[in-house]
Length: 261
Image (cartoon, rainbow, N blue to C red; front, side, top):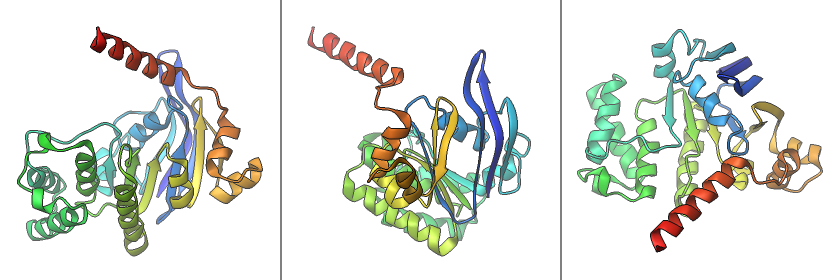
């Protein structure tokens, strides 16, 4: 369903993704893990037609995302790392717009929207403006929206970031059910290692733009002689805080000083 061969993406002299190769079978739940700045989001943007690769070959459901954007876009749903809802529209309008853009027939669309909004417990807020929602409510709506058109592949870039455990479990339970009943392929990134260990059937870890290991959670633990995926991840990528994390911390401290002065 997803095939990547020697994929490279450069921004000037900086190589964000460096000759990576991996494949994801139909109906597989695949976790793409790595520290901040490792190349995860750049890879997802290439797979979902938002960036063109510098070199290498990518196929999504038999189509090239660099040349056959529309065919590729029809086959996947995506929940971005950054918010992508229209805050000035209602819950229903965000869902309806997405369904119309994907050409979902009206009767099917209306039924699907109701089903999904009830699942994410936003049906009673269907006529409310999204700008008044909490971060968790917006995340739930984004997951629902990504499923409106029954995608063959679902891309999730840190989909449960900031959600409480109950909501995270609820969302993953539904996605796993879709994976089982509709053979939907799931490609996700997360910083919650216990989530990846519990959900993913196969894992690839990327660091400094290169894939350093691939396998099942059990294989990765066995290879690193560790007892959990988090321990395996730290053994493979190191325990040093990355510059991206340091910069984020510096920005937070700066905002804190400005606020209190």
